[in-house]
Length: 306
Ligand SMILES: CC(C)(COP(=O)([O-])OP(=O)([O-])OC[C@H]1O[C@@H](n2cnc3c(N)ncnc32)[C@H](O)[C@@H]1OP(=O)([O-])[O-])[C@@H](O)C(=O)NCCC(=O)NCCSC(=O)C[C@@](C)(O)CC(=O)[O-]
Image (cartoon, rainbow, N blue to C red; front, side, top):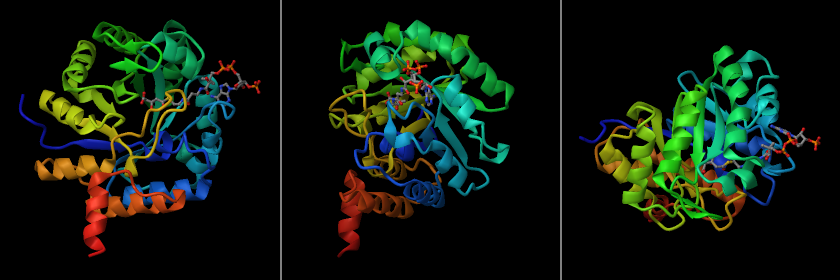
């Protein structure tokens, strides 16, 4: 398989990146981050999640953030909705404030499903079914995030067959595309390839994306392995923000800046301006009073400083 000529990157920083932050990030800062990401050329941004504020307090301002973002034409905005309550909250606003896409999120691990969304895998699919139907009926696209596709913090290694089973269940309820997520960043290229292959039994290559956390420093290798399979949709987080509240010790997603540096260097088109992306990462890192967790950003910022 030849490498894709272009890649679509979804920046999940405002959602996956910030959901685990201890300090509450004001809605205005989240809105400004979305603005800076779209100014940098991101065409898809995962903005927030409509989940229980008791479970994830950082996302309690989901409606305010969706109301506040200044939409640009050609940019798609997605939000997580684990159940009908979340979906109804996401569309309680005027149509102009609806998400373009909602994300239902399941897991290939039973234990993670219980800890993350308080139900079994089978129950999660039954909860998602009406959400998917309602979203499609409202003209909203549906993505399915599949967590723990190579490893689980509670169950250890996850067999590809379980990933295939989850992908089949997602397909069965009408989920249009899925993310193969290495939630705790334990994957290495062969394992990630097997999880991708299991998913590709149910979805075509255009509807599968890679979502890699960088806990063990393998995310770029896993990105390259997926590119070599023809995968051209990826998720990443500006400044390498993030971690999942129900996956202790897991670090953030691979930094968007590092992925863009990799793709630029390989001549693969993203439409993203790396300098502006680094500025967006610097903006949120300044707010959080830490340095961007991106090797490329660190190197380029050092060069800029002379
Ligand atoms: C799914 C639930 C809600 C089930 O939680 P539950 O307790 O089983 O839900 P419930 O239906 O029994 O309701 C309990 C309470 O929550 C409320 N509630 C119920 N639903 C909602 C909602 N949508 N929005 C707001 N409130 C809600 C509901 O109204 C009720 O309130 P109370 O009567 O006690 O005051 C809960 O487990 C939850 O919110 N979990 C969130 C987990 C989460 O956001 N995790 C992080 C995202 S996943 C992730 O990061 C992985 C990913 C996607 O990035 C990919 C990867 O890397 O793996």
